[in-house]
Amino acid sequence: MSAVLIVAHAERAEALSAAKGLVDWLENEGHSVQMGRTEAVAIDRSDLIAAEPIPTAPDLAVSVGGDGTMLRSVDLVAAAGVPVLGVNVGHLGYLTEFEPAQLVEVVGAALDGSLGTSERMMVSATVRRAPGADPDDADEEAAWTGLNEVVLEKRDPGHTVRLEVWLDGDVFATYAADGLIVSTPTGSTAYSLSAGGAVVAPTHSSLQVTPVAPHMLFDRSLLLSADTEIGIRVISERPALAAVDGRSATMLATGDELVVTRAPYDARFVTAGGDSFHRVLKHKFGLKDR
Image 1 (cartoon, rainbow, N blue to C red):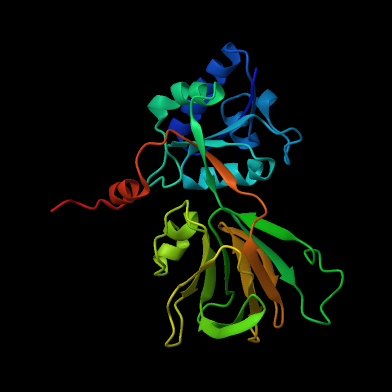
Image 2: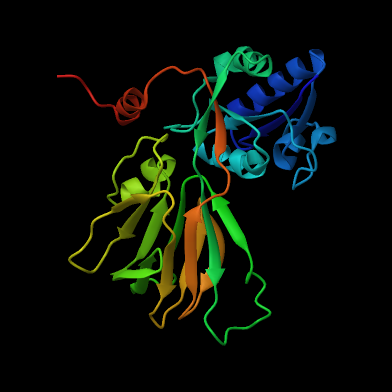
């Protein structure tokens, strides 16, 4: 018997229907099932609600939705090394490999060990407060981890924020911009892409620093070693907001620094080892042969 966590997009009827069918199949096969609160209530199975943080790691997490649902699933289980199987009930679905029609088949194959896994590096962020900052600051020692990116961006519309960037302890440059993105290779097709960053193969090992709407001549992305420690210090009078994978993390005032590094663990994706990255990219962007 295996323990399976199901995370579904609670606002998509197709995702809930697929999740309900999977619950029925898993229970008939003798497996135990947990679900997120909202989706469990939506399919009238409140008895399956999983506590957060999850007290006991499941054997498998199944994400039924789009990339946002996949990010939520990874956030719940990556630290415990639990593999995540992504089913696409969304639009682009960069992170989800399987389709709803395959759901029971691929979950069964994952549970019996017939499918492999792919490792994806993650990114971690911590805050160093400026000297004289409130010692009781609630997030003084907080750390956040994400699959796609860490973003530090302006809070006030109509203004830029000035950010001083350090690489492994050495000052690199000061940016006047709407913000800075530090992305993983997986995150290179997310916010970083819309800001003009390079597309990086998801199994590559690197960190990418991309400015958002920079007001300066140097506007290129930096592709750095995955082991680089990236410090971003707010040097303007205006504060900046930090977010990880689209989730607000904290606000930084003048003199505060966001330290971004590779996370101490990787995400694990269940994969059938099918299409290569460039074929997936070609499909998602609708690129055509001549």
